[in-house]
Length: 227
Ligand code: SAH
Image (cartoon, rainbow, N blue to C red; front, side, top):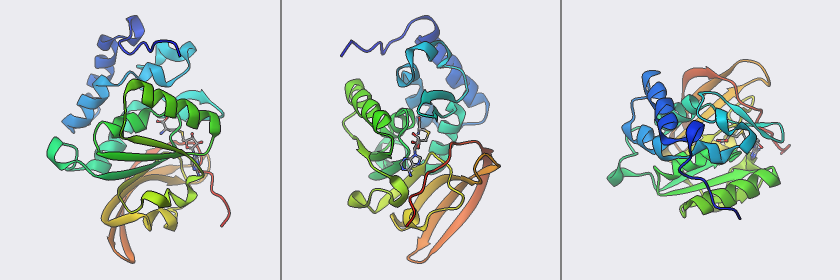
């Protein structure tokens, strides 16, 4: 494949990227590790070249197949909520799952902060692109799987944390079951095209969990296979 323009120039330069991360910090993101990792990731590589001049705007953008790369502030916020207290070097989470790889950008952010990341994508071309791109950038702790994520990724369960980047109508029990006791899940929940809310789920025991509501968000629908 052609050489990756990791460094970027002009609209994709480190200076432009720093401006975006400063903006995100200004919007209230406090976790220094999340900000540090996001300063390093070339977001322009995770989208179509035709859109790369917009890659350091704080907006969601189309990635084809009716899907989007998430808004950078929301990526930072979800990561911060999920990893609370676990992103520094000695205290990294061991085993984390993302459902909805999409462009692979959120996976790259998580990959810089946790030991092992499994990420599942159901659309074949998006899966292939993200798998190859993350490998070419140099990630060796991100494992991309082509599968329907309705039941998570059972082979590597249980997880310390699960992040879902598409919105189901309600929290799927199957995903709570893949969390360790004490494990956390961040998930946008709400009706298709209606109001969605970011929820933080903590599995407190074998049969119990708590749910905390955070900001309202707009994600593409989580497609669920009938069980
Ligand atoms: N985290 C992504 C966001 C992509 S949009 C990023 O940073 O770019 C959400 C993605 O979830 C889409 O690619 C969509 O195909 C995928 N998705 C939706 N339902 C899914 C399911 N049940 N299993 C796996 N992937 C799913």
